[in-house]
Amino acid sequence: AARAGQERFEELIAADSRVEPRDWMPEPYRKTLVRQVSQHAHSEIIGMQPEGNWISRAPSLKRKAILMAKVQDEAGHGLYLYSAAETLGTPRDEMFDQLYTGRAKYSSIFNYPARTWADVGAIGWLVDGAAITNQVPLCRASYGPYGRAMVRICKEESFHQRQGWEILYTLSHGTEEQHQMAQDAVDRFYGPALQMFGPPDSDSPNSGQSMAWNIKRFSNDELRQRFVDMIVPQSEALGLTLPDPELQWNEERGHYDFGALDWDEFFSVLKGNGPLSRQRLEHYRRARDEGAWVREAAAAYAGRQHQEQAA
Ligand code: FAQ
View 1 (cartoon, rainbow, N blue to C red):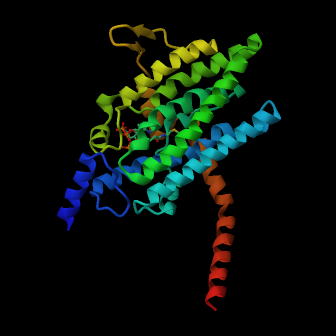
View 2: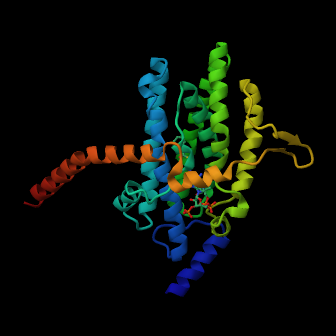
View 3: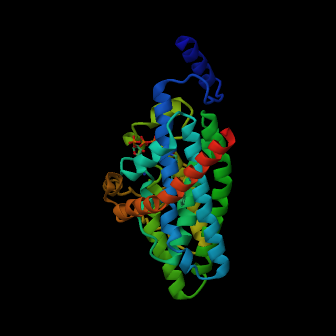
């Protein structure tokens, strides 16, 4: 039976078709997906913090309502992704515990602070922009529940990117001080946003196998290049500069060349030494501890309902 399963799995992958939860799959495929999908879910949940911090300080009621909706979307994305990961056999509580105890990874970008209102714009434009560039190809990921979750997530991310763009556009065309605030935010988020795509291909141990399994469709560097090519004209339209003196159109390649990123900083953030790594985890733990009574009460209520129905 295992051999038939293996053959069928290989046929599905070769036909660029979808693997579903009840299909046989090799253990390393399952493990890779749980790793990537749970890290992605944790990123959405921890990613609520930098912007959540600005909800009470948004500059108008309208902007506050929009930001609240965006942060709620992120919670929703985390929930669909935990559900997709659960179909692979890892219980949600186990994933929560991995994050709680600091054993789980989440995107490096969320360890940086959102210092000003302009940072909320830069997060929308650059961080959600990078997220879409990375996630559109994941809509075709070979694992069905992950690919399908990605479709809705990408639609919502496009709205997020537009709201970020609009915040930066307004600031960039406001007073000199506002323009400077927008420029500072872009200066701070540009490098870390480019690092969201992961280490350079030469240093990406998982890419080869994930691409062979049709989970990833493009390499980290290919997507990073696609993103740079997209944001250069957008930055011009915003009237803001990207902080890289080596950024230049390369006629021969048909792409923008860009300078080296600070990979020492990236790997240090991955080890838990980002500017706000400790605070992000502490905040998550506090929220989880403070919400324990709600989960207990809901479970007790469900248990009582169940007993009453049985009686
Ligand atoms: N941060 O061999 P590779 C969002 C790790 S968007 C931290 O290249 P892979 C939306 C990697 O896990 C952000 N760790 O790995 C939002 C691996 O470690 P491991 C979330 C990183 O998997 C916007 C090691 O380095 N998006 O949340 C990072 O083939 C605004 C070696 O790397 C996703 O997760 C990083 N940046 O490629 C929310 C997308 N990069 O596990 C709120 C789905 C790499 O072996 C506000 N994920 N690592 O110990 C992916 O596409 C892939 O997992 C990559 C990494 C491309 C991130």
